[in-house]
Image (cartoon, rainbow, N blue to C red; front, side, top):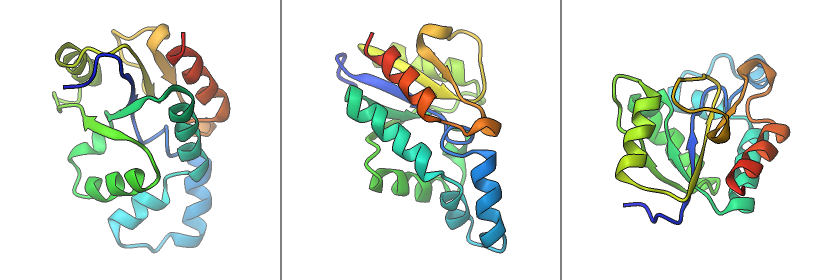
Length: 156
């Protein structure tokens, strides 16, 4: 059970920690990478990881992964990489037919928290602006501006 005083970041990966511009740059040099774990780790933008860490440092939030890659064979490698980069991942949401809104609602019902935000590039009903920070895969993912928005929402 999560401490009810915790602040939680529900974190998607694709479109938040990855973005089109960075992947395009990486693929120029590493297009032949066959190891699927290495390839997915290479796609994580170091700037976006740093922006998550800024949110964590400013709010003392913990992370719950909501990304649809949770059930992929390469996810444990990506998870290990994120943990090694000081992202305090405490859980993943349970997969409910990839209905992220329902997965988050269930998590919150089972684990009351003090405050939370959702970082995702896809909007889904049921979570309006006070708790949602929408990123854009084509506009850099989790930019500095979006990380500042997340900090404001977690510290209100």
